[in-house]
Amino acid sequence: MTFNDLELAKPLLRAIEELGFDKPTNIQKISIPKILSGVDLLASSKTGSGKTAAFLLPSLMKLIKPAVNSGVGPRILVLVPTRELATQVAQQAIDLVKFMKRAKVLTLFGGVPYGRQLRDLTKPHEIMIATPGRLIDLMNRGKVDFSRLETLILDEADRMLDMGFIKPVEEIAAATPSERQTLLFSATLKGPVAKLAKKLLNNPDQIAAEDENAQELKIEQRLHKVDSLRHKHSILEHILNDPTLQQMLVFTSTKIFADQLADKLISDGRGAASLHGDMKQRERTRTLQALRSGAIQILVATDVAARGIDIPTISHVVNFDLPDSPEDYVHRIGRTGRAGASGVACSFALHKDVGKVRSIETYVGKKLDIKTIPGLEPKNKNEDGPRGPRRGGKPGDRSNGRPRRFNRQKSR
Ligand code: AMP
Image 1 (cartoon, protein in one colour):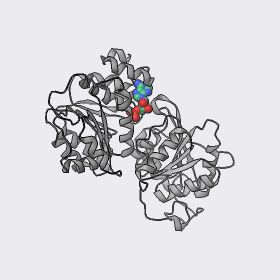
Image 2 (tube, protein in one colour):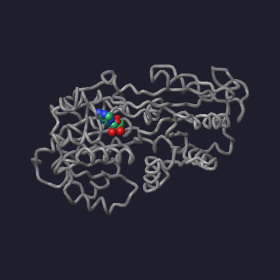
Image 3 (tube, helix red, strand yellow):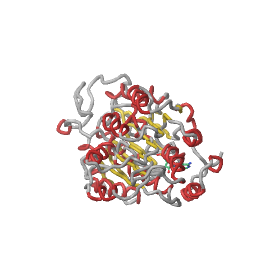
Image 4 (spheres, rainbow, N blue to C red):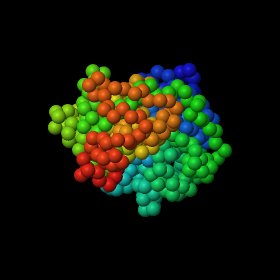
């Protein structure tokens, strides 16, 4: 199947060609015809599957015809959990509407001054990409006009709910016309997401993850058993010397650890930077630009900050600290292997992390490949958990192998 078979308008096909998309990904093949038919859609979609174009392309088709209602507000609203994802979805929207008329993209997120956003809201815009917090804020000031809204899209809905956006999302949806088309994309369709979908979607068609087998991430998932923080650093050093390495995203459990690790890499002469929620938006944007342009090779990040990063040259993801949930693991490793490229994900597991490794393996449905590096084998080969003294702490010590002074309160 090609994009031509999907009955998309010429300006969109031209943009797709310029973007270099040869053929639709699986989720695009399945969801584009459904969305074009006008039904509400509930789609379980993995990261890196091409889901953004899957919901944007058919929604943009509606813009070919002039709006039925008058007003300056958006005809398409995409709600996303984070600023980074907002920027990326907006970039893809801008690329896709390049040859369309009446298709202005407006991005709204917090952490930046209101002035420009307030000004932009008074001019006609057709596509709005927003994080729920800032949008509610602007709605409460009476600055948002939903009279033209035709399509509401919830992207990474599970994450929006995890981040506590349930109320704002429901309020925003309630402020839009009830005859709208609603599309919900989420890594999981269970629990609170299912509840939200029941409230907001009208008799939706559903696409399950099994339908998306072409989305199988081409990612080699390696597990490095480690004894201590020092051991983690040595293995990281080894991976950094891998000749196939292009760019690397390293995850730590806290902002402080992210800064410390980036500082260490810089003092070792590497091009590195950290990215976390404490940074001002301008700094975060600058850091991501530096990664995108190749000015830095290694980005050390926390989960929240790295959400939505889409840089095809990230060849390696390193879980320096394992994430708290298997869902975060999948999101982290999905930062490599984007759109069919291959990638390597290396996870460092201390003996105390055995439970986390098991739940990740259950969640992804396979065992991670245990990797040992000659000369850097773990000393304590016990696979059943924290028994016996380890370097960097006493048995049962929860210091993560770090000196005690680093064991501060977790904050992302
Ligand atoms: P997403 O899952 O929407 O975050 O998309 C992941 C990456 O795939 C992005 O870099 C898109 O630009 C890219 N992409 C989306 N659709 C296609 C396609 N049909 N062919 C090649 N790349 C694509």
